[in-house]
Amino acid sequence: MAFWKGKIMNALICSHGTRGKNGLRMALLLAALICLPLKNAEAQDARLEVSASVPAFLAATEFDLRFTIGSAAQPVDGLFGISFELHYSSIDQIELAAPLVLENIDFLQPDVYTFIRHEPENKVIYLAVSRKRGAAGQDGAGLLFSLPLKISAQAVPGWNTCFTIRNVFANDSTGAQLPVQAGDPFCLTVVEPEVEVVPNPFTPNDDGFNDGTEFKRDGGIPSNWVIIIMDRSGRTIRELRNGENIWNGKDSSGQLVLPGAYLYVIKDGERFVRRGLLGVVR
Image (cartoon, rainbow, N blue to C red):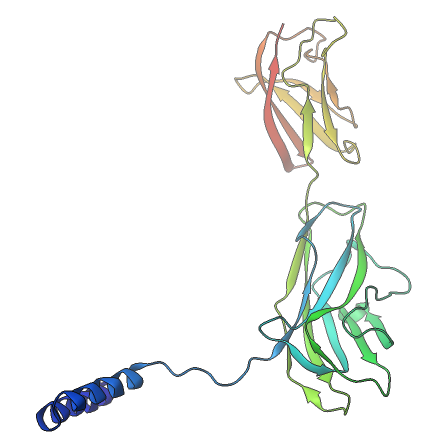
């Protein structure tokens, strides 16, 4: 940069001294051109991406892994076929169809061959899709296909896995390789369903209306959960176990508690699930 600064200053001095205003303008233009960053003339490769609608799922949720090719800014030119490896960090909490199938084959339609093979010992799924002989390549961007999967009903909240595309090979109708790069890994996590506590506050006065508060959760309250009710000093006054999900406003001895605010804590073994406040009104 010091070298270019010296050249620019020399040009300015010489032009101003020998050619007047026109020379000065030319030197300034030269200086501006030299200082401009060079634009990368090479077009960036199209990318093959893996994703899903959201990165977090409840247990027993069905979802699709989506594989998309290119974008408006980085389209693919003349795609005829593509193959790649899908590696994963863990799949023990995901249920796979038998056999695995590809759905929503869109970008290379209407007439294609597909290939899929799973090697669980290597934690990899081999995938490929190709147009049939005689067809032309496809330009642009879009959904290649989707792979339907399901989170196990016994999946533990907090479990996660990542899917990574490797060894992409894309070709045109002549068999020539096309420049397609693997996109970023996609990671998903199993999350805890939302727990709703209704009504809150409630009125345990045996009038048949809002006499208890219920802990609601999609799929029900698991039998291994413990719902602990505590007073403001942190003293436990009641525990709900074995799937019990309604508190009637009574302590462990069967006596109605005093009106006021109470804390509830939900635990799954040693794992904290949720906490919140309950209001008891008379």
